[in-house]
Each structure stands twice: as C-alpha cells, then as structure tokens.
Amino acid sequence: MEIPAVNLKAIVLVHWLLTVWGCMSWLPSSYAWGNFSVLAVGVWAIAHRDSVDAVLMLLIGLCLTIVTDIIHFGVYYTAYEALTGRDIFRFSVGMAILSLLLKPVSCFFVYQMYRERGGDYNLNFGFPSVTRNRDSYTSIDQQGQAGDPSAPILQTKDEGTQPARSSY
Image (tube, rainbow, N blue to C red; front, side, top):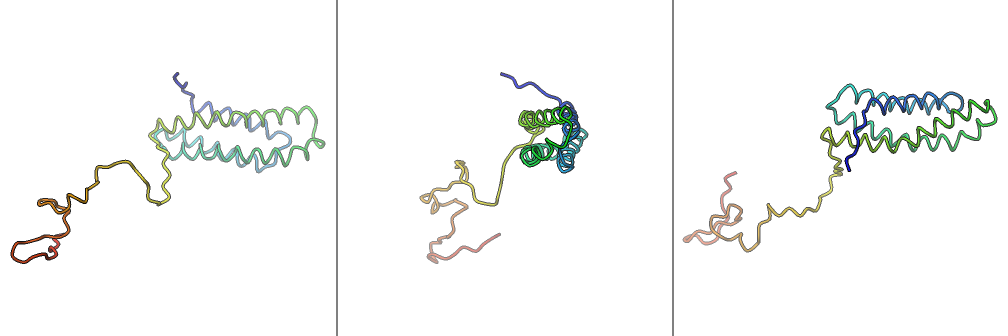
C-alpha cells in the first residue's frame, strides 16, 4: 500500500490555524511561542525544498511540542475552566486537542518527507559499532604469506628476522 503524499504547506497551515484557535482563551503564551516557533521552522522547510536539516528540525520540534502540549493541558486546564466563557473555552480546548491529536500523523508525514529528501536517521555517539561487514577482515593464517602487504615482519634469508623498514 502506497503512503499518500501530503504537502508540507498543508501540514503547516492546518497546525497554524489550530494553534491560533487553541490560543483564543485559555492557553498561556508559552504554548503559542513553542508552537509558532516550530511552525516557523516549517516555513523554513517549505522555502528550502532540498534542506534535510529544516525537515529534521521540524520533525524534532513537532515531537517536542507533543510533550509540551500535554504538559500545558494538564497544568492549565483546570485553572482556566472557571475563568473564561464556556463556549469560547470549549472551542479553544477542542481545537488545541485536535492539534495535539494530529501531530503524530504530521510527524509521520514529515518523517516521510525527511526520507524523500535524502535524510538517513543514524545516531552516532562515538561508540564503536558492531557490523557484519567482513570486507576488511584478514585471517591470522594469511599474515605470514609472501606478497601480503599487511605482513608486519619481513624475513630475509641472510639476516634472519628483522623488523621491516617502514616506507610510509
């Protein structure tokens, strides 16, 4: 089954609209700053169609705003429920929750765009890795054979065993 192509402009536009509606009555400015900053990175990813970094930063930002949105909802929901008008509050909460529910789907599509732009998600923390590539493997039995460039000791007939002079 083929994954449908979703335009990055549509993702940014939908999340911008839902964030604006979510900020109408009850969410603090930190919610708006966080979400609009990520959407600004989305505009950067739209403007630079070949940039892998922009799409990766958008993906990371969307994942982080999922966590911060949950924290905002948990902390501020009960505090603002009694202070604001009931209809505006319910609409604003509904749009903010809808935005939160759409973010994992958006993350999936942004990840697909990241892969299409040539991104390869490899983490390298500087630790040695175990691979199954045996191309550079040299058997211990083959080290002493003549003509092997990796032989550490050169033996001559008249001098015995002496270390070879390095010609690096």
